[in-house]
Image 1: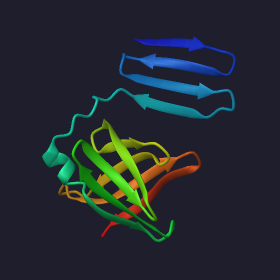
Image 2: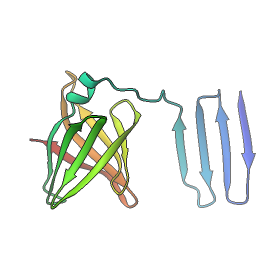
Image 3: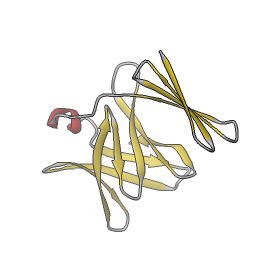
Image 4: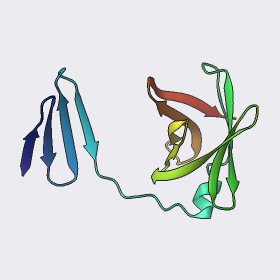
Length: 126
């Protein structure tokens, strides 16, 4: 079942309760899908700990465990808490969406950052 709703600048299509398509007034389309909230275990969080570098950003992000979850440490002295959003994805105030990337075997090989005009900036695991 598809339900469509309109406002002055957007059209919303709800498809089957788990998918949403938003068509903006300028013709762009955004697709959304419902996901389960993340509740990572300590062992799952430990897999993500490490240093991640980007030549493009000329920066290194250090992901570390603290007593309550994960943090990202940036030079010189910035520490940002990571809040779980969905599997392998976290939100950080001032950093945006942080997604950990895995290879075909499931090993974490990189992370990507999405914030404002930055889309999927990759940081390779060192």
